[in-house]
Image 1 (tube, rainbow, N blue to C red):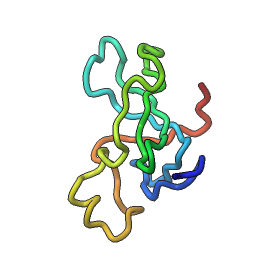
Image 2: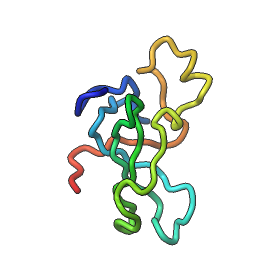
Image 3: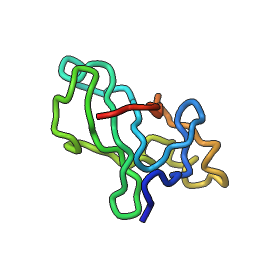
Length: 104
């Protein structure tokens, strides 16, 4: 199990380390009229797997916290993720940015 603020070994689009407990912002894939252009997720763990858990969207908290989520590694190219000898050189396939100082 990861401790709060433990490094996941992955980096955001800018190369910043992603830690358990961080908040990250990423573009919304669908329902732009409901969410806006982006959403913020908290990096949590499900067992030992880092996940992204919904916190709020550009247009506010339109879903309950934690209502949606995904596995953090899904943000990265699967083949690169599996065969990388150094995960710190990987970057997400789409924009994913650690949000410094975000508070609920």
